[in-house]
Structure formats: C-alpha cells, structure tokens
Image (cartoon, rainbow, N blue to C red; front, side):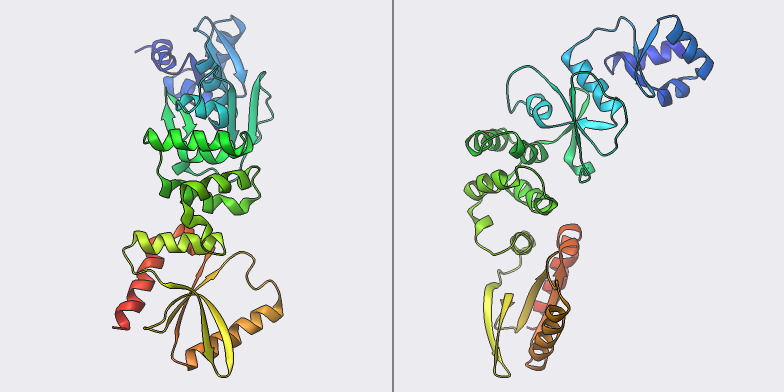
Length: 301
C-alpha cells in the first residue's frame, strides 16, 4: 500500500489528524513531510502533529487534535460531555503532564502530575478521563449541588461505583487539588463511611480490609500499659493486634518520632503485635496490606 494511502486510512480513523511518528511509520521521509506542508496538502497543528487539509472539522476533531498536541487527554467539561454526564457544546479542555509550549487557540489546558493510566478511557476515539476521575476533577468547576447531580448520573449510568470514587478521591485528596472540599462534601453524602474516621488514610484502610473479606477492627482503641494510656488507630483487641497508619504528616518532628518508638516498644512488651502501613503501601499495594493483616490474624488463632 502506498504511504499516502496508508496514512489516509489512519487519518480517516482519527479525525484527519496524525503525528510525525505515524508519518514515518507509514514510510514517508521528513523531506516528503515538508513538501506536503508547503503544497498545502497538510497543515501543521502543533509540534509533530498534522492534519489533512480538507478533512471535516468538528468539535470532536478539535478536541482530538488538542489531546495530540498537548500529549494529554480530554478532561473536565470535555470529558463530562463525552461521557454523557452533561449536555451542551463540546469544549476543548484537556489535562496533560507536560508543557508543550504550543498554545492551541480555544483550548483550555490543565497541568497535572497525578494522571494515572487507570484514569483514562476511550470515548468516540478520543482519550478521555473516565467517569471516576472526571467527577473528582469537576469539583473545581461545580458547586456541591451540581456535582452531586453529576455523581448521581455517573453512578446511575454504571460509569463508576461508590467504591471507585472514594478510593480514587482518597488517593488524590492530599495533593492540594482545587475543589477537593466540594468533592468530599458530595462523597460524604454518597458514602457516609467517609466521615467516620479521622483521616483519609484510615478510611482507605477500612475499605481495603472490608474488600478483602477481613473482619472489621475496632477503631481508636485506648490501651493501658506500663501505667500509660495509648490510642491505637485500629486494633483487634482479642488478638492483641494493633494496626497503625503512617500518613504524610506522621512523625513531623524528632520528638514525635522518639515518642512513637517508645510507645511501640511498650506495646510489644505487653504482648501486642503492631502492624504499620504507610500511605504508599495502602494505596499502591492493597493486596499486600490485606495479606499482612490476614497472616497476623491467622497466627493469633
């Protein structure tokens, strides 16, 4: 198949837009690219991104082009409307990790450092944030009542679940994101359990243990040992197993670090087994965390 025909078939599936990498893979040389641009057969949209002259223009094609130019994904209102969570004209709004240096007319670009592959889906051939991530992102664009309706629609349409929303929220909530308080207020209505414990990390651990089929631990347990009183995040009291969460702000000072070690030694001497889990472990290795707790419980039988 001739290179131009191969590229034309590719462009037909991508709103007439293609990249330098795709051009070279089709068998065209840089000199041939220059010739096609000079003769008007192609137009340059951004660095390494081109469009067949005469290809139909649409809101979808402009959005697709923006995702290619900025190496990002459709997000916020663009994602909400692609997913059917909102109605109205399709804007050009994308999230990207890198600053490309190219400003596309009419595009709104959000810089992000926390976009995960699990946040992305394909809608109408466009890489788009999924409903879970979109609902969280829209906390910066909507008030609580509007966001609640959006979340309800996503849940009703089967595009996300309560558990996915809460889990991803807890992973993102400590990043200083705009609108996170609005998202929390809505999720507390959707999932009242979110407000039952003192920290996001503790909430996430509770849900992790429940999902693993483990018995729920007692929360905020006061222990008396060696003439002192300690409060544990979680405990299986009968088995004398303590489960502690080490969040980002834990042990902020040397004194706090020293006190925590002294406290743990006294608990161990009193027969307690202490399991400690960090934010990274709870969010990144939930199966491992659950296995550690399960093993401790089995050893106490």
